Length: 239
Image 1 (cartoon, rainbow, N blue to C red):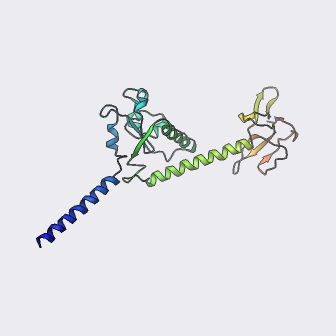
Image 2 (cartoon, rainbow, N blue to C red):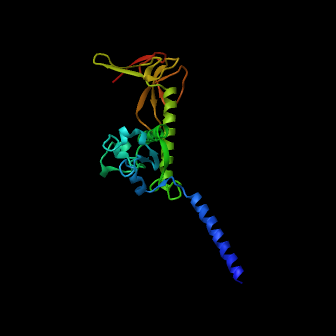
């Protein structure tokens, strides 16, 4: 009986060791609480860490910019994602909420994330608004990710639209009024064709913008300028 109890105790101890070992191996050392992150400020800990959208980066090699008293020290030891856009650098204004930002601001924020991935080492994730205790995205984190992806897709669409319909050059003269015209570089878009000025009406909008179109381009959203020949590369616009 004693031997059976001893063997059972040894069995339980072995199982406990196995599970404990498994737990330690699965524990993610790259997850930070807000309290953990606050230590990496260059004073309490020699390293400088910052978080953006819950992603933690080691910016120690940029201590001239991020160290105590430096220009961007405000961002260290916290997630102040919103301030990358607002430019508000006082402690009371530190905020990681960004879901209400517009597409352009979200793209700018994503640009900052790409910058940190390129220039600095990512060391983990911040538990909180963007990541949970297991390192997975929270509902808020997933929402922001989708908003950023949507903003990037919109930019790609507008970039493609701009290549297809480059903006016209525009000038105004007190004597002759407004003139729009097309060149191979009008609107800042270099190409191997000139095009003809047309009014492009965006879907759902009553206003238009002047674009240059290729010969034969037909669209329900395109309108010829009144009093301007369809084959002219320059048009005077009536007030």
